[in-house]
Image (cartoon, rainbow, N blue to C red; front, side, top):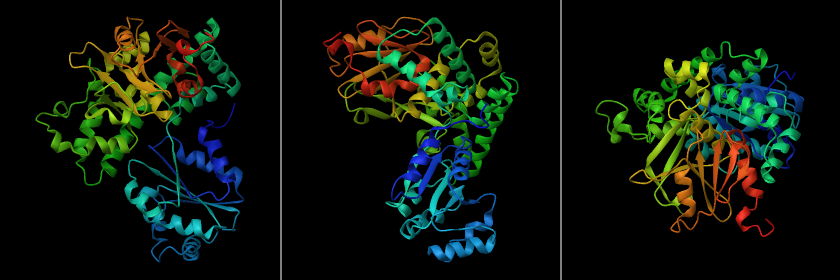
Length: 454
């Protein structure tokens, strides 16, 4: 068994190092998703010398830029604090961690790039990262990598599955070939584990090591508390109590029929004008995913949504699990009832899997609630309704959207459920677990109804 979890950033970092003229790299992401571990692993295996500076644990290094941004002066200041650091040109990686507490670090990236002697990677929590300041200070002299908690493919790697086996799953999707009974059973079991665990590395690693759920809920609950503590630490000028109120109320709204987030329901007498910036702060921190309601069902998606009508999902489903009330926890763990909270767990994990592929999230619900759709994707030519079914119930809305002449951008749909791969002439069906392959599939597939060979 491997001594660590393989991550997608591993290959990205190698490609970054090998690319000619690569820029200083900023790895962005929520807290405790494995940024530091991944960078340290890469550094150990690819550089003769590594200089790692953590601006929180080693606050004395926050002053290394006090004399300006000349690289030689910065190096002098670093080695004055620690003479044992070896900084050999073209053989050294400098890793600035927790850069959110030292914004001057971002300003130095231009100087390091022009100087060219050292590779630079910066990392910081989006919860405390004033990215507007960093962007203005380093525009044109950095590149970004947005990191998430483990996606389902990385989880499968951790369980010992190979890329070849994942390619087999994709080929079944591509060929619309139902999975065998054995494949379906194994995929379902792994997905249910992932749904219960989420993708926080510490949680996944504990489960893989001990092969049971002992201590998992306690670890998830502690991570949830750590996030809340960080909110109070990094909220800046915003009202920390209001941010916590919104964060803690997310499961309540997800447990309702329409799941719409309403500031007026967050606290007694709460008004939207009092909460300006709160939702944005949580979104920018990377700990929640926002899903906007579409006003009109047509392309482009970005131009047709209502910014005041949205749903909030936890960025990692494991934190949602930890936030559930005791009765829901018992039902979920004892009975494997994944439909608790009106299907919110399934919706949350699908939102998480879509976001990890780079999708923005959109839903639709008409005024009289006769037509509702969980998510929307698109291919080159069409708008694709994506229905997530916690049960094997009817698909009235999906059929209505595909059949109605007024939705000219909608040609076909996708239904995710506890079901096998299939096609019924209107929509494709896929198991929940294969959500992580949807972007790859949409780039390459030819819809059956417009495929002359079908």
